[in-house]
Image (cartoon, rainbow, N blue to C red):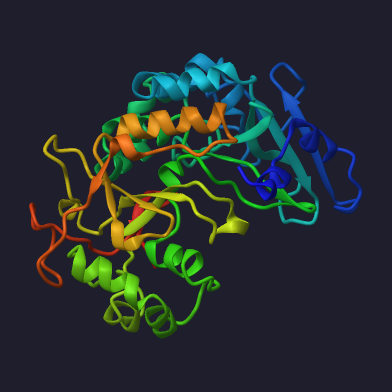
Length: 375
């Protein structure tokens, strides 16, 4: 871990300090609450009992306090035992709530869930797990367990059963929280979960070329021409862009069929050497490349070496070992080498996978109704 990363690290003391900071103005308030602490009236821990009338729309469910950590982490325990042990060695959950009276709907609402592990605050994504219109889920649905959740059912085609269950069900991804100045700077380092991360073209532009986001499509293509050629021609992935995007985007062949699942460098230091785990997100799920076991292939880019694309040979074990290492030993870099092999290369452009003939369609991203095409 670099000195810059250490300075970005958020501690429990930093979160508690939000309660007394005055630079947010008189209309914004924060509170950090732990299990058993009094919650605002607009936040409840109970699910919706049979026959109970739905609560008002401004009611929020504190899922992390509904039951203990054993229940919340049960899916992780089933398929990622090392990660589960590291999380259980950390603290109980904290909930940061905010009251922003500048908005249309003022009142206290959950902002972020945290657990403290090895002196750092790890943010857990527990939002919109049940994908319902009501703000509080029925108890009958909660009791069915994590395999009933839409996020898991959607993500397993891209991540495989084990990783989707762990990181796209009760816990919908997590990251190491960072803060620069007075604002949260975005997390990094842990599975992005059902939200999935940025597209391959964005990773190339920021990490290799130091370019800002949202450049015109033609400018993106010119800057990333070499890396796009490697993905399209050397590794045989299709030249497709946004499914419902401008025709110019599609014609330029911007690779959007890969998304970041894990990026081990903070947002402010994209150019630093680090590892990136990529997940396939094609529009046509039948085009997902799979290994001999039928599970989808996950790819690894080390230190921006897009000319040396790697395949994770046992993604579930590799990610489990990585997450446990990152949670418990944050000052040393994890070595993916035991779980890597070079990606197969194609014999010509747009030939698809050398073994399966597959390729990428346009990327998908998780929206409130599940995986939907990028617009």
